[in-house]
Length: 152
Image (tube, rainbow, N blue to C red; front, side, top):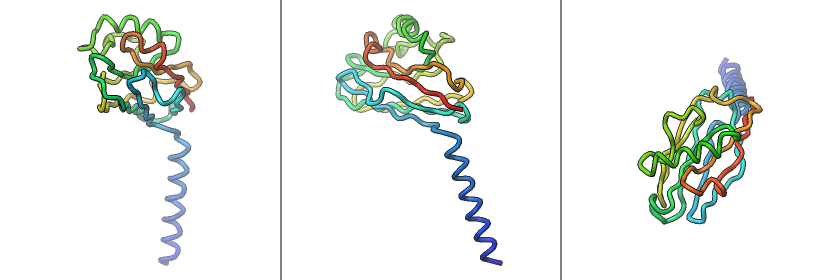
């Protein structure tokens, strides 16, 4: 009896592990530095994730006012306009217009040695959609950007 129970338990755990992998990646870790670079140019997430988390680590040493970084997610076609419009919010507003419907998600602005993250519903992204992540600190989005690939 113990052998059957143990076998069923192992089979159930293996099945659950397979389901978790099928759900896709729900967390993206990104590092930014004082040279205005992200460590990745592409990230993949699954729209089937209940929530998606983007974690940002600033590996540099410069303060937020001089070399602050954040991560903003938007449709690729909206990226330049979101970055441009975010400048008006200033450093206190994390260079993001909080009322901008084109902003899917955005972390706070951080300086060297700091970490931040943002979590948002996976349903806010459509599989196969054209999305980008970028830093909205003035002038940074030209170099600090990447493609966000969304799977089912």
